[in-house]
Length: 497
Image 1 (spheres, rainbow, N blue to C red):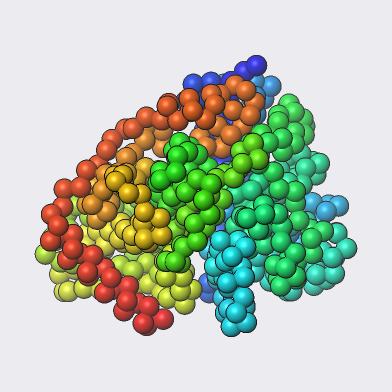
Image 2: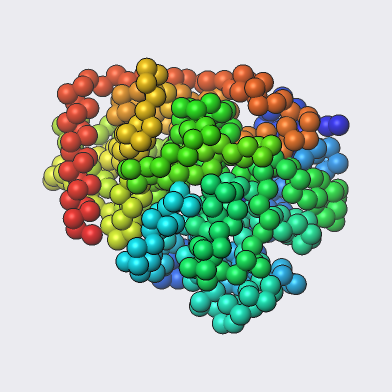
């Protein structure tokens, strides 16, 4: 059997399809951006049909660039933006509304209402999540409550609910497979991560009919076979994981205590806690890292809403850079005597604060502050937020006697300046892998190992290779002063919310 694996990486702003060969090397890539819809302040939507079209297009592009035909693909792995919600007609496959994106804040008031009823502890105990608009459940409640006839139709079994993976698998298999995996299910607010099952009490609270829910499978499983007419061959779908869990797998963080952080639109740090369900006392999330062969591995997660999005703001909002790679060079030229802090709460603050009402703020500006200082502040904000997450993680789960090493991936890690500053702020080594496509690689490994053409977990972990390690160089007093300034800026921002 051919060892080619196709990974579909459906992200927040673009869709990528990547072909890996039997040595886990990238041999073909297709990418297509799609439109972001902002119908109201704080609302973010995607057109599911446009997402579907980008998947079909990029898969064809990737295979063409790899110089292969569909029958040479042994399996497909899918990774996706998590928490984004789609509801569609079971008969026609047509969505009843735009997808509501993970960044969307429209359900903030509903979350507050549930909190006032004392329900956050119930959700946290069962799902490991907090009551925040970020997660899928309240978005689904909004769709059922606001799309005419949706609640009644869902109760009759006429509608299907899914995160993006489920919607894509449905389309890829011609409606034959209505499934998700444990990682995506664990982000919905209605999945019990202790029992590994949809939870009737939570479904009742959010008024979600069980009839509209997909079957939940392991991350490496038989998810169905593509319609031959789509790509010219029937290809099995054998791996699925939400993007951050897929990155954890792609970084080979299989042992308890291993830690990765992904820097894309947002930033997401996951700490593998093994079989232990660690209940955070610092407002982190307890989530499923992956489920393989029926055995669940858990993680602590910290979610930052704005990472690469801050660079996009510099480019598209302030127009102080023409392209993202310019940011590091500009930041390097900033005046070292100016301590400018950007708190990028453009869509609220995520972990460990979880304040959906917070908004972005800049502190420390003088008449001499210019584009270089803005660039440095934007990049440093990602480093400071990561430090906040790691501090919270190690208050919840301490690894005695073990050095903290952060494995990083995502678009921002290509910047040497940013990675060096990250190591400086963390006071810990930062490892950048040779293969930066770790999210897609994780999905590909799930599919490839299931197909029997890629190595098992142990050998895959041995193949992980480092491109560069960034060691901290900043002196202790400077680091301490910078962190003090950052924490003051965050405190002021939260007080103003």
